[in-house]
Length: 571
Image 1 (cartoon, rainbow, N blue to C red):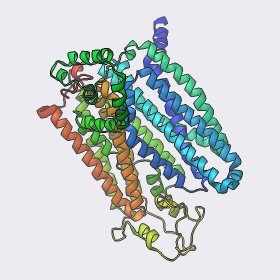
Image 2: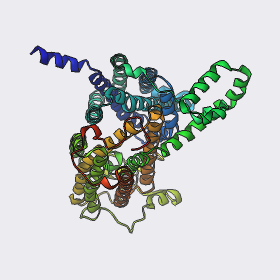
Image 3: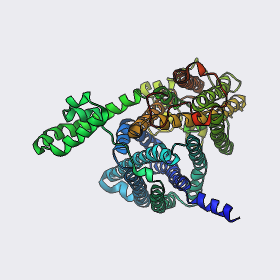
């Protein structure tokens, strides 16, 4: 009995569990904030999606441009400093945003009258700017904890690393559903201002607890204090060590250190430093993308990024389309819960498949499973109830907006015709206006057959098993095959690629927002998923060669089918 109790205590005080607990607190706060900030911005701007759209574009654009720089900062600083700094910046930014939003909710009428409303506009800009800083800090936290700390805590045990990755994803799946529900109830039975106060208070308490947990994990894992030094080619050129380039790497590094210490000249440093500091962000951006391209797992990372170019997920686009097809909010909430369950099933499938078939083959099997399920979505496009009509131009709404000289027909409010609001919501968010209503309000819409939308969501939900298993596969491939000194910048560029494809999918919807074009968007999405998995297949083919389709129980010591952590010579 005492042995069992001791084992339980040992687990709950282990670095692994403390890392889980810290991630759960961080993710819970993130999900609450991401859900609430969109609602707050809609509430503040008169039920328009304009501010929400601007916020989304700013966030995506910032990570796209700064992902490599954030990753480079993670690489060049100590692990504890990076984790603590990003944690404090992220939570402090959310707290400041919450306070500013509370002030706006309290004094919005007065702010509208001051300086012709420019003060209120400046408050909106300030909120979006600080919220964007919080998201960038959250990106840094995700890179350092999920891509670096977890690898060090797992050590050389790849099975432990796989289990930890799967557990992290299960935490993500649960918080994705539960956190928005919790803060939504507070905002519903309280008010948006109470919601702001609750989120600010949560982040203040959570920041203190997470800070302590990070310190405990750092103390329990001494190897976290050891970090490989990063020496870039640009630094070699600046130090003018052409002669040393012919020597062995270890000797070259030693000479660089000695030159930096012994032959330091202040005037030369000023001349080099002025130009170097201006060019450094651009050089880092370029070097990060070049290094990403040269990685042996480049095709696997690109394959994962291509999966972001899809409307087949539970975001505002798919749920808006579901409303136009007659699904209620309660049904959608049940479907979202089912998607979370299948996502967790995907994490379980990943750990089982990896033990049986190896890491690289797990990605292949997961990709085939995902694509097979998405075939249901393709079939749904041609089933009864599908609004797809190729005779209707997907750009009809945009043409009407750009070239219509007379006012559009009767304008309806969301209460009159919520379906039309959701159907054209992606276009209306650009100008904050309401969509046109059906010309005859007395006409009752005919019931829409549910066969098409049922097949669509059956495919989307079932595909989550393969999707999350594939995501975990690529995540672990990046963890194992990227050298320690480049983990930050490579994963930063990977995040940038993900955001780039995500941006493209929103642009695609903005260009074709009408329900008749949604079937075309489904076909394009499935095509991009197929291209992503073809890229991964090419990577697997290079990695395993003739052994690609030999799926047997591998040796536990070589279960990952990839090179040892930190070795990029072979995959």
